[in-house]
Image (cartoon, rainbow, N blue to C red; front, side, top):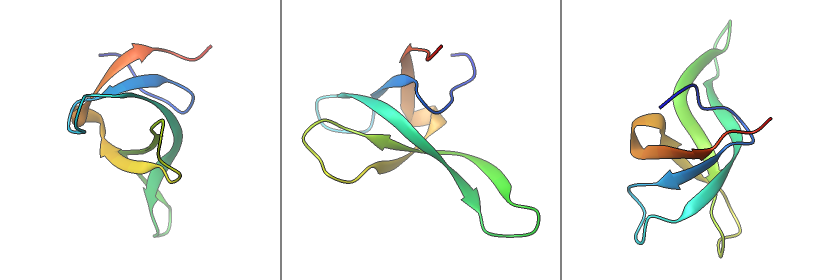
Length: 65
C-alpha cells in the first residue's frame, strides 16, 4: 500500500459506498513524546468533520506530491 501521509487520497473501505477521501491529519496519542499511530483523520465529501480511520481500513488512491 505504500506509506500513507497527509494530503493523500484514499478509499475508505469501512464507510458505506467506499468513498474517496482526503487525509487531513494524523492522530497522535497525547503523551511525552507524542506517539504516532496508524490512525488518520479523513475528510469525506458530504461530511463537515473528518473521520478517524485506521490505515488498514483504507486503500491508497493517489499519493500527494
